[in-house]
Image (tube, rainbow, N blue to C red; front, top):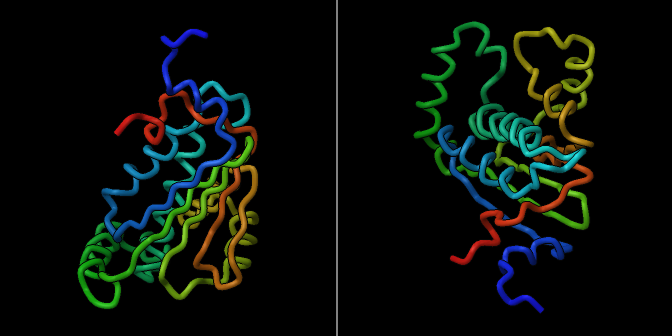
Length: 183
């Protein structure tokens, strides 16, 4: 037995791992969380690419923060883009929005990855939005669901519309992924 092999190679034998994150409504954290979680996936996989996961997760996290926790409409963004972000910044610091969090669960099992994103907003009628996005992909807003649908193997909402689970098939954990390194 070669004892000089890196312990990080053990990741090849991981059958299941779960990571849970609770993040505040901070837009600067969204790309950091998306990048962190996508870095756990082997970039050489044929059907599960970290870049796809990162893009879909960015959209899900943005939707959870802006439309979910901050209760803002995508329509507001088309009316006045900079005003949308001014209002979001103000809401982020005010009650009840400031106390709301985004819950992210990364669950790898076999070769399937699921990522659940839940916000503390009121939810929304996701059925209408999924249908409208499919009907008109050129709309200036609401394209997040189309992007998620394109890159995730599947997606599903809870009945309330404040929790979205993305599924990615054919995934393998990356050797040396952040959660496998010695702390």
